[in-house]
Image 1: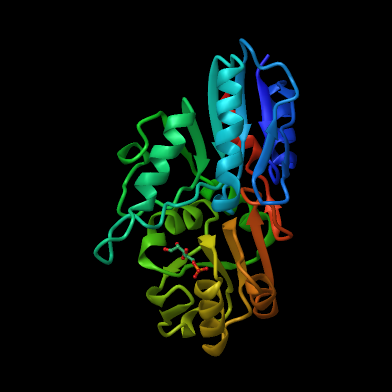
Image 2: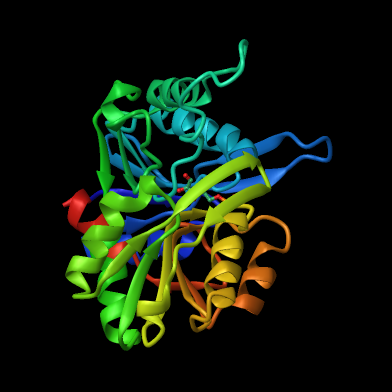
Length: 289
Ligand code: R5P
């Protein structure tokens, strides 16, 4: 029987996955030593078993070492195959050297993960200049799409939606969500001047005043993209938007600030967060089958 091992923060999702696969749900014991180093122990038998480690990588600098230690321990103790389910895959955005001398972290991180695991399954990795995970991951890497789940949530929960993507990069999946939700869509144009400095150009929206705007994005990190867009839509006379995100990273007070501007904020559970309202468990179970 396959063994599912969650790293801290992925327990609930791992339990849904184990139930869906009729697999055994195990545990990884972790703690921090006073000096900040990690203690990692696999308390159950892994020898001769296929092990699936579930670890969301929302805080990758905190998570990665214990993830690598858990994988190494499983391998040394005889696991036959190691799959990483990382519902949120970190370090996908630095896909180019924008300044001379920068580390190309999407590639370096892919290399580190691929040394430890035989396969990777993730949800909506931020693919921009890398068109596919296979460009940087030498191991089999599956990118699942949350768009149908977002569309189904919108169909059930929002009347007369107008789906809005904040930037041209979002066009491909915003249009998929809109099609499945049987709603019109718009894609805005964004300029990022810095980590927390984003400018969104809002077009004339007069024709859409009777619609409920639904802002969708793959990642909310600093929240600036959604916050600027929400402010711009309301300034143009549209209703407060429903904000839907796949990966709810929400740094600092971003969630509070966005909640103050939005009609509601909902995310998938690729990252455990109070806004979670859409589960990707069934998607992951299907892929693992
Ligand atoms: C960028 O291309 C992504 O699709 C998101 O729009 C971006 O990561 C959101 O970041 P933030 O919340 O920091 O504006």
